Length: 240
Length: 236
Image (cartoon, rainbow over all chains, first blue to last red; front, side, top):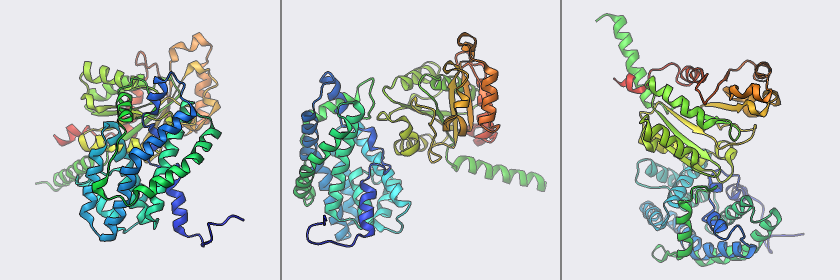
């Protein structure tokens, strides 16, 4: 029988919330993005290999999603611990301006706002969710996705580390989903790749979840340029 | 002042605030690829505009921005019926039905941005990407759902059912001009549409010439706008 290490705990509501928020069925609109994979696919004459997609995802995780998105998640939980409401707004703004691609910026805020709205439909009286939602409405916050996601996870008693895992896992699934729809991967290959990404997700979260805000960074210039070109494509299936 | 007139003025006052503050009505238009969704919108907007209604358009597209670009050029740039920023194209990640039904988050977000930038709009039309006969719109996204098919698929189309054909608020059957060329019997389509839709409305149109589109516009004004005057008129 498989158990969760030596400590077999009794499942809780938070465990189910963990499943609910990390399910691609949760409505955030992320399926509309390929993070530039679509352009790469056409640039490579529709001949992207399994290995290239694996490298593509790893580069994003290690060089961008880890040191920015995951860092935001960790800092949100720290703000909550310190009851530091105003730093949430600073985080939101800093992340927003670190997104270099216009479409990515707007996709992040759109998904973030809709995520918050959905969670707020069944989580009531969470002071951080309420604070952030009010500030979005009044125009003082933008509602970027990783921040909204962390607030939602916190409101559902999901730990910081698990939230980081869920965010990165969700990213991996959305890119692999795009690869499936583009016909680059087949369904079993997709699951195999998800499995291969597990250690990368784990190490990226460990490395970045406690990263201070002033150490937040990203460096994927080639992928940024790909996304900028993708934005300009006349015919495309995905937002970016 | 006569008490009756006072009551009327009060009613007008409340009507104005109701119209000004309520959310902008949204119509979803879905249908298979090539059924004429974009062409229908291009014919509808001038009719509604002529009656003073201001319309915004969100066009979901599976693989291109062609439909949105065409409508922007045709309705905004060339004919000046709306500002160019009132035609917005959305890429749907290859899932047209998901974007309007299972997870309409991105569409709702864009609708809300349009509402906040243009609160005086009378109507927002959301065009789905071309899809199959199971398309429906989430009520969270659209208040009224028009499903459009065309006769080129044969006169069997309505009786094949599907959620779009059965449950839409209005079924539009397009390209009636080519029925005779492909051996489609419109009377069969009409008979089956009545049965399948339990007498919910349907309209035969030719979106290329505009035939029948006025009836669609009238249906929208009656069922979606409840015969309310355009906001610009109500405010004045």
